[in-house]
Length: 170
Image (cartoon, rainbow, N blue to C red; front, side, top):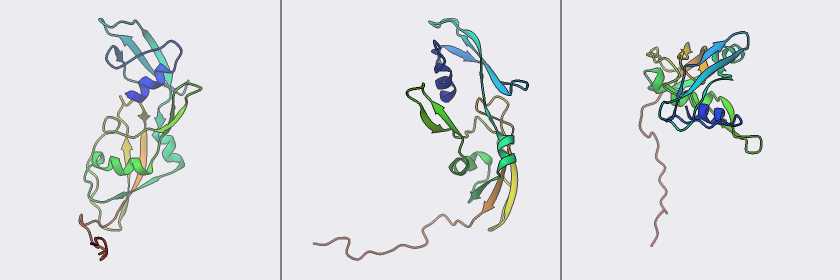
């Protein structure tokens, strides 16, 4: 929600926050190829606004058409457990700030953005392709992302420790 609020506050004269305002679920408008969210003031807030804002969510289906992301699976059992590894290889760039203070950042995919499910059981070296579906009320993503999972061996402990004899000297 923080990124959406920052983006809306970049509009001239708009100052919204998550405490004084209510945000509708995003709606895709096909002929504009944009998404719309409505922002309304709460009853006891200091401001007044009831306005629709247009912006673009990441279209995961279009991203998958261009490239299939490969994620290394270790011991993850569900999609929500896999999100950390997915966010390391699949980057979603965006910008924050005004024209003079623009900052390039990356949007992480979170548990509020995607439907959770159990991952298929894989053996070491095996690869499988899955579909990750965005939740309809995700403010940042829509559609389905195609991801290739590859299982690697991981035993959860150190396998080699190098000894350095001269670490401590008197």
